[in-house]
View 1 (cartoon, helix red, strand yellow):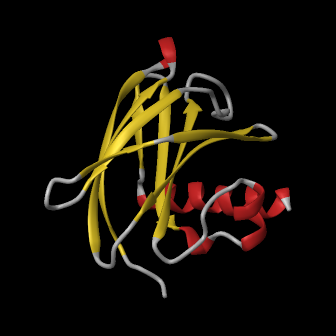
View 2 (cartoon, one colour):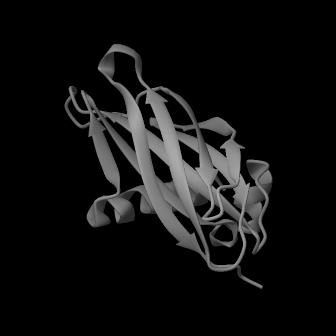
Length: 143
């Protein structure tokens, strides 16, 4: 089961890297991806106590240390919010997930069909780097 989660999260991290979904903040590289929770298998969602339905999405943040060979994952404090087009703001609650050498910060949030959300995320990796990540993404409900 852990292999499925690692595969999913690695895929989630590598695909955005190809698309350039990361931001360098001082000595850290912050990768991010948001996806519908139905992309998770039922087993993975259950094992990490994540909701899996067409009206839920997950924001995945990973922080890598650029100052070390191989860019290992590093711990950070991650917080933030999402805002829709009419200005409704929702605070995001991140939970840290450690799988071997990988560290992920996951936040669940509800979505509506064709909803565009703007994310404003604060990342604090201490002396390695502290900064803000801001991006927007459109979501689609899966029935």
